[in-house]
Length: 308
Image 1: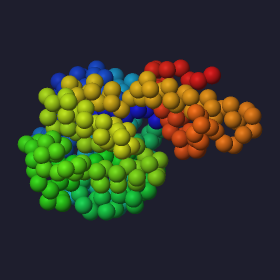
Image 2: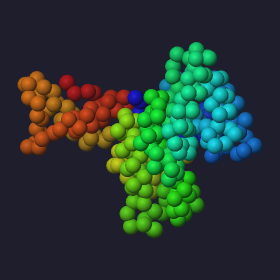
Image 3: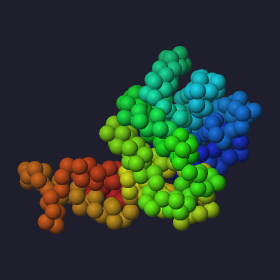
Image 4: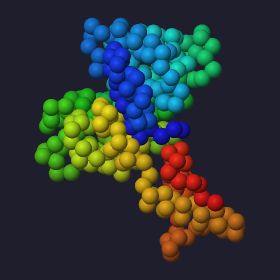
């Protein structure tokens, strides 16, 4: 699976932003029909996304399309309008405000019909955004709802509203947290989402950081979620991409450590030994898997050649 370190959200109805996003260093471009699009521009966003998908060359970019919530009159129209007209160019459909595995069942079944009708050879995958107390309560079941599912995403602003948490910034996206809580206020929902994702072979993606001018705050926020096991983070401004890519990419130290673990494992296999020891410490299978994941990402990003 390609890295999804940075996911750049772009309003679906603003054509000029689409080409800029395509040419950015974001791993994923998410063409949005939900929060960034006013009510009177929903139809225009749907049409513009289809036009941009056909008019621009997206071959080397992972493309996600965020629909409106399934509790609105727009959600099902978004799936039909975009997937039927440009589904072969879409990697994933992002479903916001997923509260129940039934939401994913519905989208998956609808995509089944669209793909059969259109004869698509490539399947459209799904990303589920967890944005409420109910959604978090059901996240383990949601993570198992469809083999189309690829990522779980944390929606911090709506989750905050759902649980009645205090608003401590204008954007509601992760700023000024240390002023109100002596620790990491979102540690539990982040860890809960990571657990459900990784238990089911999915990626976990963190919410965006609202103040795009605060690079230090963004780096801290990204580092926190990366340390918990998240694979990437949404970004709302191109200026955030470089920082997020750097945080979620394996460092030279990570790569060197992974190389050491893999080499030791390969040597143990050659010698018929089941146990692997490095510097007097035993290395278990989980550590070997983590090292292999680091190598796969490093190879894709061309940061290092695989160990010989």
